[in-house]
Image (cartoon, rainbow, N blue to C red):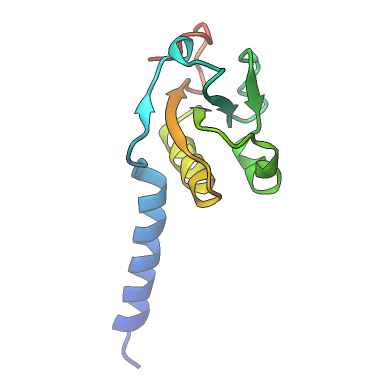
Length: 122
């Protein structure tokens, strides 16, 4: 049996997974949370509960692991995403886009960030 076909399929599978994790969506821009207008955008915090210990005023706290079963609770308007790292941001934004949401901006806070949540621009 020729091993090139299974190896090629495995390589394509790995490449697709890497693409979803590491390549950001086009059109999303990094914003300071203090510059986000919560009247125009839905602020969605997808960090795990144990990391998002400081609530963001006006934000919907829906960890990435719960998005699949609870995405229908998100209002149908453009979204500002709060994530702890780039991989979480990319996976969350791709999932939301697949479900028809428009993710326009994001903020990264980092897992060990003790900074003021109003300005997670580091």
